[in-house]
Length: 318
Image (cartoon, rainbow, N blue to C red):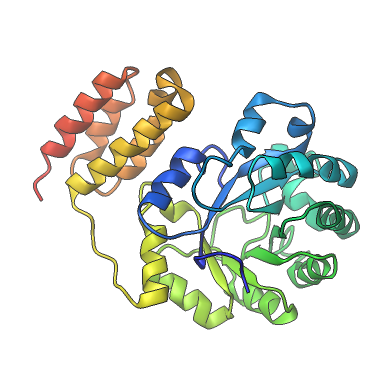
């Protein structure tokens, strides 16, 4: 069984699933939080930014810290430092498709070197006192679909659970996720499996679980601008509660809380520019959103941001 209160995971997304995002999702209800990926070489060299990403000890909910790298010995070296920073458990990134990651033989590139991947999983499991998981994809491309073999390797080397994204590296995030391969992976191992890919509603989450048999689901892009989707899916899976649509004023209140959390974490100078992408996501389905985004993206001061948000949302008829 998974050692979490929720079967709904917030997917790790670089530059997005930081403490402010995790705290907002958690404040809205139940979900399982995963950090942004943390490069092990940055931890090794005591990079302040990476330490800040990995420092989850102050959060009052469990956080899975995701590690990125390709050197088994270095993984083993940094594990104790990451554990001291408050991780609930550790996840190894073997699924990131971004070129600058795969070009350095990390992320989903490790699916092409299952021997090295096995050494990494083994090294982390042997060194860590926490549960260790691995997140990977269907394969590198359509000609090298090896998710089942990869899943068995993870299990054989001590992974407590695995997360499978139903797309290859060459797919990136295009096309439909292959739930058949997720089902094959689930049927090939005894450890819990988290399914990732195209879960964008409570209905899709239930469909994935019913079709593939996975133990949990992971939600990524659907949570952008809709952080409440994680607890809504949780409530539906656990209690059958149908999600209610949020009113514009409720969205505004959550957006303000998110921006305030960004300020607390990054400082106002960085937070307002960072908030632009979130503002775009939060208002993506609201009235006259394009004009509002164009105005907001020119702002740098918090006071101006507050006024613009109030002006926009107060003009929306419920």
